[in-house]
Image 1 (cartoon, one colour):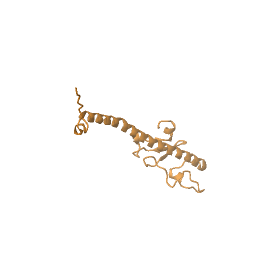
Image 2 (cartoon, rainbow, N blue to C red):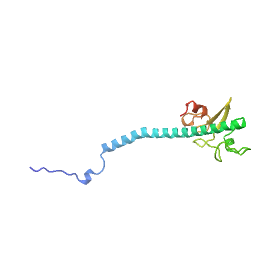
Image 3 (spheres, rainbow, N blue to C red):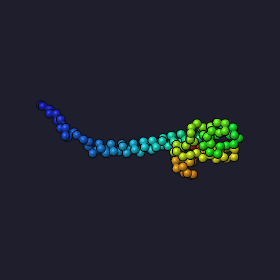
Image 4 (tube, helix red, strand yellow):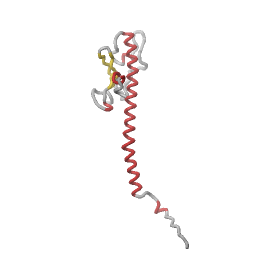
Length: 144
């Protein structure tokens, strides 16, 4: 008895079935709900970390400024500008900005200098990426 092997024609095997397409669409949807928020979260974490590093650098420069001048600087620009002795406390020709290209705000709170980033929106208040944070909050690990 001869067994015939049926070999599907090329036209019959071309393309995907509806079931295969639905599986691919579901997988893409699941990846979108899991991967995209994680990427955005890491991006925001990176921006906050970069800004925190800048705040720490400014804080160190401000401490040196205070030792030399017996007062806190009023602006970050004052740390970049050379003083009468030719000393600048931060390298560069411009004052550093946060990860969203906003200027840092300096505020004296008693004997402590607070160095603020106003977050992504560049204005007071906000949550998430728009949250304001300062060097004290970084030190206390309220900001990561």
